[in-house]
Length: 145
Image 1 (tube, rainbow, N blue to C red):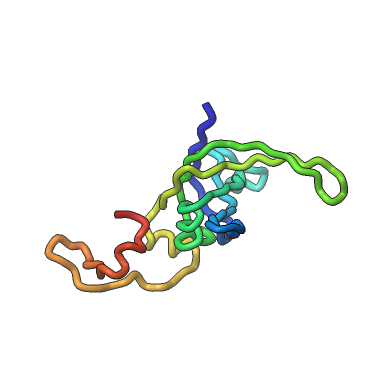
Image 2: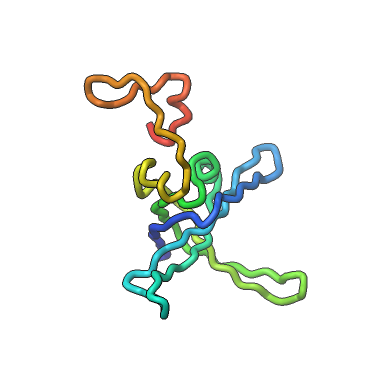
């Protein structure tokens, strides 16, 4: 079984590319910094692993639209190894997590304190149940139904 589940923060904004052809597909690449459990280096600093991730199609479009440096997410996917020959003629081996699902691991307010994004949360009319009304014209753009 080849299954990976990780929780971490994006080290930078996702890099997005689109394939060529009649139906272009989005491909997102990002690196996830995942803290090592109970592991400290010689300076008593938390250490982390940096996991290269690749998302395709709708998952890549979601990453482009909603993920940014510092965002804490949970990913689920599988490992894929590969290799290529670089311009110096050396063989380089790669290991990526191919994303099958990704979701936020903390609230937007908590995330803003880590990303430095100080935009205030949107405000609007609230129903008696405590939820904000979302206009129908943007409801289709939300990452959930």
